[in-house]
Length: 74
Length: 166
Image 1: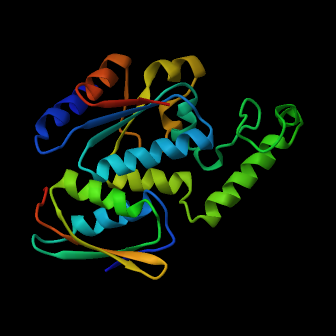
Image 2: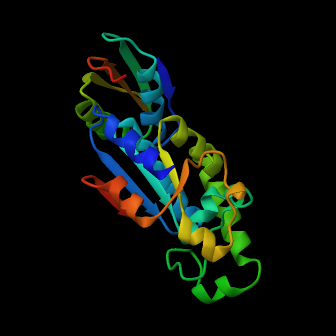
């Protein structure tokens, strides 16, 4: 689980990418963010990087994003 | 050195595209967005190159990277009449204000952004002509700088990709 709440673009994406780098295929990364751009940015990132955005959950005051690692670049 | 850069570029087949950012400005409000775009590009699997030229060299100079300024003159977006920006001390004030706002929004400092960009694989290239014109020696650069190149190498690094000029 990565908590990027309080940080703005490109904070959440950078945090997500750092977790992605050390992840294994099949891992699910949970990202918490308050940045209003995170929803669209993570969607774009997943599409571009070939990974799967499982779910976006609206929590009170923040959003929870679940990303499944389906593609690894060396 | 520039040849090495080019070779490495061609070896990497798994990248999803290229991004070249040409940074010619050395004020904080120009350098910060450039670094943010570079970092984001790297997270999206792009091969990212930053080319520092003219005042953009301030961003890779050890002496200035930690103290980049925001100019109130010639910046109509600032919340003050332009003519007031000419008063001594106004640039320092505008810079302090902006730094305070960035800190409050938890935006990392420029040197921190540099480290993150580098960590994610962004390549930093310095412009040889600017070094000559402005009398900048190589040893004044921060460690993150990869090499010194010319315009031809720079353009070849951006070939077929997105190019942003700031």
